[in-house]
Image 1 (cartoon, rainbow, N blue to C red):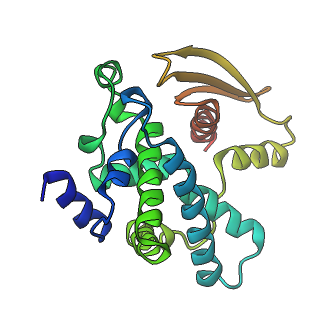
Image 2 (cartoon, rainbow, N blue to C red):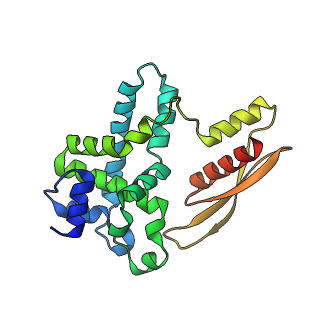
Image 3 (cartoon, rainbow, N blue to C red):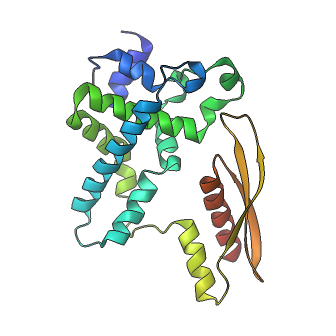
Length: 220
């Protein structure tokens, strides 16, 4: 058994019947056409429905809005990337030469996509139960870590503005840099008469969220 196969079995708790699926799950588009994008599409849906079912049973008294806030955090790109780092996904990624030189193995987008692709491969290779077991094991500490459903930073900032009789926060894309496969976006958020903050992200949504966090920190 090779290093990758041993890591897969130890990490996923499943011995692949079709190893090629898992090879594809860690192959970025920069490496070739047979990459993880379709598996990531599938794994994203498997993750979403598994977490939703888990939350539905775990928090029987919470309304839909609170469950949705929990779900959004747990399936976010940030959370998937954190889990990828905990599992040691990066050394097993297959990247093109330029992407490797650009440090794409550190990209939250790529790491998060790879985790979802691995879930998609696990679903195809073994069915629902192996995928569910893996998700429950990898996400367990995060599902149980919040007594109350977390608010998204952008929602929290908007609520702060409303509570303090201010206009809604305004978000502006002020910069973009980096290679095409892993761009960095810079977003500025401001509340008139209060202040502003800038932050970076690997997409506009991520940058807006980080900017909201930065401004909330200034206001606290």
